[in-house]
Length: 201
Image 1: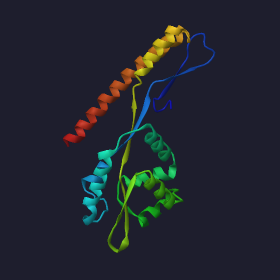
Image 2: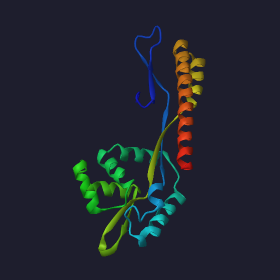
Image 3: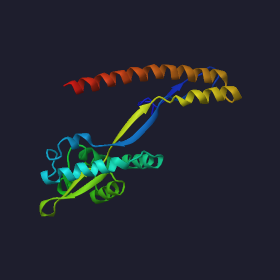
Image 4: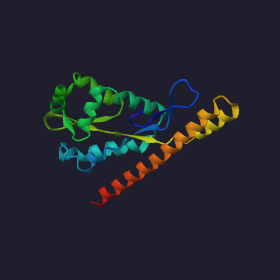
């Protein structure tokens, strides 16, 4: 968590050990599989099924509302290495069962179990192609980002008012947050610049 800038360790004079401060929150949500939607036929789906695929994604997101329960489901799914490896493949191609079976070389032992989990959690859509061949396409991709935890400032104020933490600890937390905020803003600017350059190409 330190490596991905979610928490930061800091020492405070008079404290017996290092303190851990939260400096970022994680945001996770679903999003459409944009790379696949641009041209599903180029990604492996038969031409006659491309409209069905696009409509399935549109219909899902027409009614989708992020909830805590759904976010927790996503986290549970993504921490499973077999599922994550399968999603990595499905982010780049709409695959048949034969293609998915090749994931066994990458440690996905239970392809059917993974597909069942993804189907039950509305992560994939299955299409019937010629000669009964099934095609598995991502219905929803996911997005994970870090966000600056502004609400922590209110918590620090409350802690100060009730004197539940030493002043020097709260001051250090404010210093850590200030530094994290400027780093966060600089990173966001860099990301926005990279996106603008990508869109211009």
